[in-house]
Length: 419
Ligand SMILES: [Zn+2]
Image (cartoon, rainbow, N blue to C red):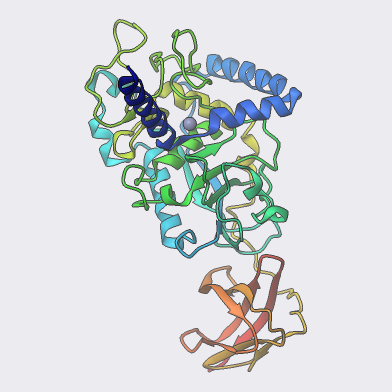
């Protein structure tokens, strides 16, 4: 008798490990944790839900004037290795994915089973990296922070500079996205509206961000598409819990069928019905299920309505953000720290930057013209005794702002290019 039990035990352990290793979304757990930590959040969430239902009732699909909303995004890359320090191009590819998916411009939308095609939504939401930071400086919409934390273990600590991460930019004006080694078997997680500002936003594993990314199944940037759905107050198709085994829970969306649990992977034959709805299948190609990226390609009109309710309610402040303004580059320069030397200035061909300190301060170096356009960008330069030599001979004659941006401060100085 012993042998079969041992085999069964090994099999069960194997199964539980296999499930534990299946990367998944952490939003349900994080929301539950937040509700336990903050008793007032339940009431706030209830008020938001009442508002949402009312707004949807007052704005039937197709009744509103069509407006495309653009959301200012800041991406905080927090890294402990060069692999985790994903490139600007990788980040931009994620913005492209979001703009395709939220505007129904993704080419794979053609794979939607015909029974659902009339429900597929152009959500009329788009995304752009911020051009203006909270202090009014021109920005790339990306911050980079080197950290000694090698695994964040699914925690929110990455949202705090004091814990080795990076503080949020004001959540009322920016969608904050932290990209890091998230850990804990998670692809990403988000918070739904009502959460405190310091936690608000998304955390995404660096292997799942952008297109193509560094993972074999979650490689098309759909983790962020899914998590932003939560950010705009969507639940998973099976509701707010880990599963829905008695089929009583729902996601508050009329045109997504009930389903009993997440669907993983891609090999699900259509139809696949788990809650006896009689006329429908689980909507396993929806962004709010758990399929591989290549199998997730649409939101419904009902989901769009919930997201627009969020943008007209708890997320409305994003629409009056200054984050996408043409940011005035202050000719009012901040005096550079006395330990940093810039020479020669004026110049016609090269500028040297050198620090008297030997601490090798990690700095982003940028040159911005007076219209706010970035004309040179050198991220992650270590400033120290050895002078950094910048070639500026290609720039037209005129005045520019040289910006040195470290984790702790931003220093700017006027430079003059002469010919
Ligand atoms: Zn999720």
